[in-house]
Amino acid sequence: MPTFHDDKSLQKLQTIRLSEEEELAKVLSKKYGFTYADLSLEPVSTDALRLIPEPKAREAEIAVYKRLSKKVDIAVRTPNNPKITEILQDLSERGYQPTLHLTSRHSLERAWDMYKDLSFAVETQAGLLDISGEQIKALTESIHSLDDARKAVTEVLSMKKVYRVTRTVETLMAGAMATGSSDVHVEPEEANVRIRYRLDGVLTELLLLDHETYKLILNRIKLLSGLKLNITSAPQDGRFSVRIDNKDVEIRTSVLPGAYGESIVMRLLDPHSIGVSLEELGMPDSLLTILAHEIQKPNGMILTTGPTGSGKTTTLYAFLKKIHTPEIKILTIEDPVEYHLPGIVQTQVNHKDYTFANGLRSALRQDPDVIMVGEIRDHEVAETAVHASLTGHLVLSTLHTNNAAGAFPRLVDLGIDTGILGDAVNIAMAQRLVRRIDKTKAKEVPLSGEYRDMVDRVLGSLPANVAKPTNVSITWEPVDEADFASYAGRVGVYEAIRMTKEVHDAVASHGGIGAIVTAAKPQGILTMHQDAILKALDGQTSMSEIVRILGGIDMFDSAGG
Image (cartoon, rainbow, N blue to C red):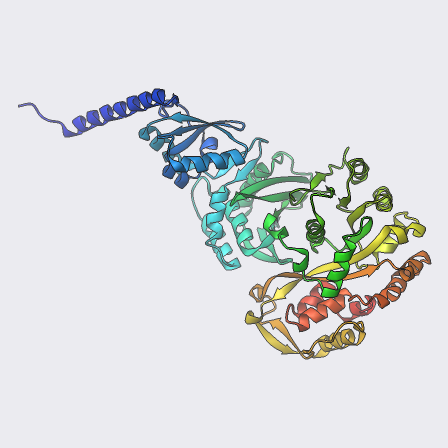
């Protein structure tokens, strides 16, 4: 009696079944007018495969196996799966041009099996790299604090997988997004490499890296950002993006050579952060009323001042969103375009043939009603902006000065004739961002010492039209000075000076900032220090935070508070 070899028979049966499955796929492809794809013979591109996350690919019975620029070949088991329609729509919105091919379940299993070796980094048309939004989103949902972010990054660093470095970068980005951090700093030192998040404007240490891991992360970030790996002695700037929930979060990368290696700063530009309206910025009601009137004027300049990270861009965007209608044309000149606003023409300078100056001149030939200039840096830009404001355009821009009063002598320093400032400038404002105190995680503190003196001085100098607060003896402070959990988000503190005859006379006589502040007092607009103190008494921020941002009582004196 012949011996029945079960294993051999099963193997032969399996081969027959697979062959029949492939033949059926061929028949169906001809019947429905599709080309047939055998993924056991066709090379499967991992860059193409990464375009669709594995769970979605399995659910839809689909695999993207070939990619040439924006043209992609997709293998499907059945084209009438409703999940395929969603995937095709998503790919089209991302600019891809898909072509469907019929395949077998066995072919798809072969492609899906390759997911386990993917790093979630994908190549873009520009040759840059983007990180998978799906992976980032999954990570952010598990991170709720700095400690969670620290643990997540530490866990990934301990992995022995080949994709450890890429996952580390992904986790750093996810941690920053989950905690609301604006920047990720990677700073090499002699003994180790320090990683810090900027959370609500304050840098806080996340963890320390060894130099070997840092070098791998540096190269990955350079690849992601489109930077040159072989350049280590010169600064480089780049970018990459993460697509989450159909929105792109752009990361701008700056690499700067240092004594122990290249310092990296990655800034996260989340489009959700500019969803705030003018009314939600935290301006005093009186100032909000004034600005709502000023931005409706057909011409003139509105200037906002403050250091980097003080929220100037968000304020200007809030102005633009407030006044935007189909009846007016708004054009911006930015460096760079940080956020994209629908219905507005936004352009970006390149410091070579498209600078703020010639960009502004070109903008005037585009028949705009409103122009936003990212920053007035020199005489040429200042002169052109002033000319634009005098010839029927509303111009919004920024200056680097410490306060609102400083904007006027700054324009004079840039070569603007004081005689025309009165007609050119409508209003100048200054702002800072202070952290919001979470009163549920803070403690009540009786006012005393320097804080008491600051409050008394501000209450005694309030404009007559501003009501004094009912609470003048209690503020809220963090339980621990290093406790970031006591704060949640930030709110702006503001001041503004309208161009009146008195202010113009003070500017024209070169009386200095003090003279301008004095001339502006009858306007009854709060100073930044007054606004900040009132917000502290209202429980919106802490006195320690005000001192950190605006300085102590000596600074109050110099600011005219």
